[in-house]
Image (cartoon, rainbow, N blue to C red; front, side, top):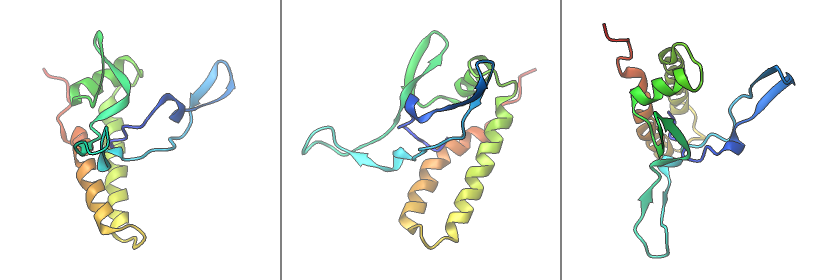
Length: 136
């Protein structure tokens, strides 16, 4: 949701007490890479980071493209075992919104950075605004 295209497997950790008692570690090294521009070769065109580092399973296919809302919800249910991924997305969106609000009052964060983050996060926040209720 924060457009972290640099989330490699090394950026995810597990905590455990035993082989049967394991859980995901808190997130770390989360960067909104979509705000940075790069060139593939010297003198080449400036590009935006629009893909993820890891492939996401969608049905029988894998892709590095950011998922649609439907694909993200299906991934959450099928691959991650989350019964109601829309609730998780709502919590993440709330935290992102609060973070942006706090950043407005933090003079350590340049207004240009806040503007770029807000624009990049808007796409991720859209996951929370999409109607994710099951159809009748």
